[in-house]
Amino acid sequence: MSLEPGTLLAAFVVGLLGGVHCVGMCGGIVGALTLGVKGAQSEESPRLAPFLLAYNSGRIITYTLAGVLTGGVGGFAAHLTDMHHAQQVLQILAGLFMIALGLYLAGWWYGLTRLERAGGVVWRRLEPLGRRMMPVRSPGQALGLGLVWGWLPCGLVYSVLIWSLTAGGALQGGALMLAFGLGTLPNLLLMGVFAARLARFVRKPWVRGIAGGAVAAYGVYMLFVSWA
Image 1 (cartoon, rainbow, N blue to C red):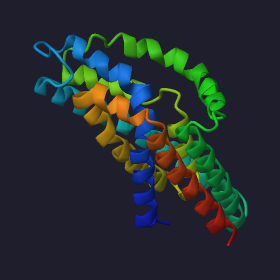
Image 2 (cartoon, rainbow, N blue to C red):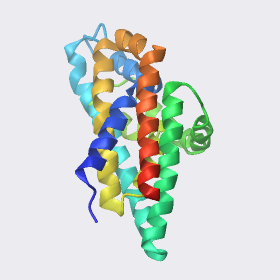
Image 3 (tube, rainbow, N blue to C red):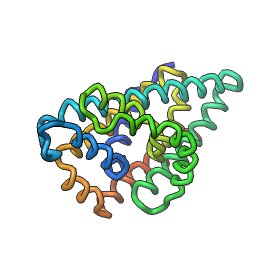
């Protein structure tokens, strides 16, 4: 079973729209990258480019690996039960999470914060590993930091991981999370260059409302398709 190109594009767009959340969640980490970069007096310094690329590469690799795991679990569960029924249930679950994610991004409902708190149990064990890599003094350290920080409890990431359960298998789940991760890349790279201006922009209620509303609308579409 392979994913349709439209599904991968949708995952990319969700990552892109989710940038209104990424700026808040990862802004401090991106700012910390400047501390160990010799000659980088501000986040606009070109010396930061290799560090930002390495950090984000590590983060996206972690997302992809997580997608491989969840996609594999979803595919295995589908084979244990009636394939169509299992896929329908998982798609409904994913649609509901997309709606919750849209409301979360827009700032209209924060129920996903409970999921983030649950993920904090694992994160407390991983976070010290990331702190040992700071201050970051090489792109290799930035890559390692990204690999660890990819597990940061995040309702956005968790929602797309639920979606990857419906992908049909490990490779498909990994592809879905890779597309999502690439979608988050423009915002986080821009954040490293125009951090203050971008942060002010994405905090505007209308920006959050449009992004969240679009994601929630896609969740409604997923529900419609699953019930059709």
